[in-house]
Length: 268
Ligand SMILES: Nc1nc2c(ncn2[C@@H]2O[C@H](COP(=O)(O)OP(=O)(O)OP(=O)(O)O)[C@@H](O)[C@H]2O)c(=O)[nH]1
Ligand SMILES: [Mg+2]
Image 1 (cartoon, protein in one colour):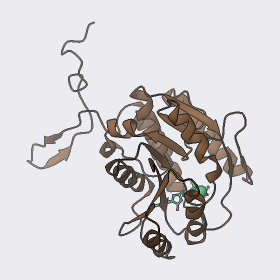
Image 2 (tube, rainbow, N blue to C red; image 1 turned 90 degrees about the horizontal axis):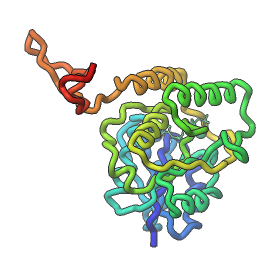
Image 3 (cartoon, helix red, strand yellow; image 1 turned 135 degrees about the horizontal axis):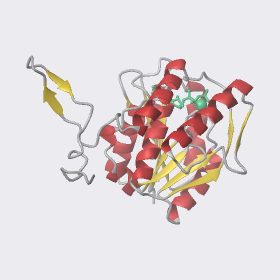
Image 4 (tube, rainbow, N blue to C red; image 1 turned 90 degrees about the vertical axis):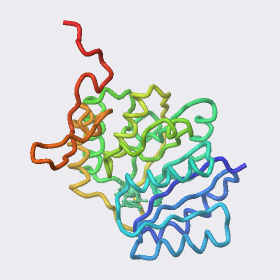
């Protein structure tokens, strides 16, 4: 019974993906879906060769680097369409150790709607990280957690297992973020919708080979989008288009109390 789909987004992971896939296939319940953004280093071709001989491996190629968030959304949609019950998100660079897959799965099976592989609960941690990297990660986590009131220690961690019903219930098209902010935004939506979230400790080593795609832009996006989430400016629940006086259409970013389903006259 292959009811678990592990979605792995890749961009230039040729030196990792060929080792990661066989490692994941050691778990008989697992299927692997790689979302590759036309990596110049040939990652897609390596995955295509696996997919030819192993039905539990699938590749979705996209025309160019379209960002991590949209890669996850594409992967989640396909995992849902293919009937997966447990849908994992995982990096290709071995920072997410395949060793933890059965633990995350077991916790989802006993009832958690979202299981997060967490660096910031007892037993978890990072290794071989520079001081600067630790500061950015811990600071970013604290910032997002406090602003959004999330009762989760690792809000940016990307090693997760979602139960099918969670991803089915959320409107994935409304997610607006691309990098780290994507993990925060999705977590916040899961939390707002009232699903159960649990964390399990993981040790997160720095990538051994290949290069990081983290950039100042990704960090800035996370800083800003947390505020946008806080004030519901990212994707208003009932955002609609309004016609400007000149007749051109523009996206309407704000929303009225009625849009949110409140009575017209709010009690004073
Ligand atoms: N499809 C796709 N995958 C991406 C994109 N950007 C990053 N990835 C993949 O997403 C995963 C996480 O990216 P990393 O570069 O490891 O980012 P990180 O883990 O935050 O940073 P490091 O810890 O420095 O490695 C890796 O598997 C990347 O190959 C993208 O634009 N499209
Ligand atoms: Mg990484």
